[in-house]
Amino acid sequence: MQQMTLTRPDDWHLHVRTGDMLKTVINHTARQFARAIIMPNLQPPVTTVAQALNYQQEIRQATDNAYDFTPLMTLYLTNHTSIKEIKQAAASPFVHAFKLYPAGATTNSNQGVTNLEAMSPVFSAMQEHDIPLLIHGEVTDADIDIFDRERIFIEQKLYPLQQNFPGLRIVLEHVTTEEAVQFVQEMPDTIAATITPQHLMYNRNAILVGGIKPHYYCLPILKRERHRRSLIQAAISGNPKFFLGTDSAPHLSHLKENDCGCAGCYSAYAAIELYAEVFDNENALDKLEGFASFYGADFYKLPRNTAQITLEKTAWQVPAYYPVSTTNQLTPLKAGETLHWQLKG
Ligand code: DOR
Ligand code: ZN
Image (cartoon, rainbow, N blue to C red; front, top):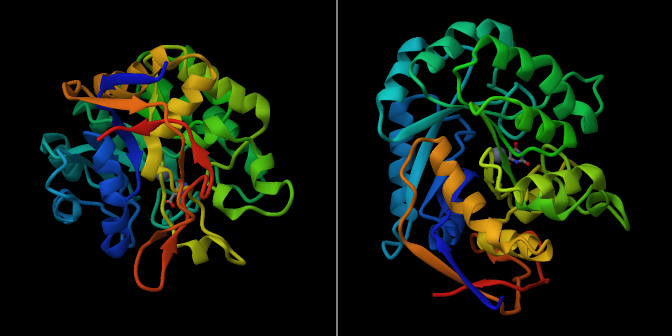
């Protein structure tokens, strides 16, 4: 296939930050996607409907008017999130979910939840008001190996949560393991998952073989090859529980190339093109539209998009970096490499 047209996709997991970084990245997303679920892990985090509306305004102002793009807002769950806030969020047409970061799990998660069990009233209200819970599914115990953190979270935290709140819609974000795929497949339709391009394209060798490669470092961390294969099978299966969420997470290059480098891969510049490459390599381009454009909208109970995009099989070179300011830059995933699909127009 040399060209394909599909319904305009949505990105169901995206970090865009604020200020110069926001201005650098937002039009990369808006050029491809109709909507994106915007992560609330700013410093300070987006915890109220009022803050989410301000943030949405800032995103809209940074977006080129030429694009028809809607940022879908989320709120950051803390130990202090009130039932009132849950009701307000569920009633707001702009806020679409709450994001649960276990405290300490990842970037700007220090104000995240420290004790899941204590959050039952909040989960109960979310279930009642039918607003989805998006989960960064990793335990944070110092004695748990970083490669096991997702699997153990599922066993110890997610399974009981699902049992206690069977009506609560949950997205297990950025799944990285065979165990996560299996869990999502076996659960009722209230449980879904997003899959990132980096977890479909790379295993943990990418970070560690031939020198430490900080631009492949994200959380949850890349896993073994068998896990990558399992994610690919899930993504191309046509199972509507698995849909597109890039987790594109921009950090300035020097903050990743650092003694203590930040976690996150910047993929938004070519997200749909990266997924197209993965699906093409598996001879599964016919499954891309469901994954990228339908299943997420259905899960969030939002209308499917009607506009279309066209991708062309044309080689192009990824820039070495994108300038963010006069002194700072952003290194994209696959910097300097060749991609084989390109969005037309
Ligand atoms: O790699 C990641 N980066 N994982 C996350 O969960 C957060 C994200 C970020 O915000 O940088
Ligand atoms: Zn994320």
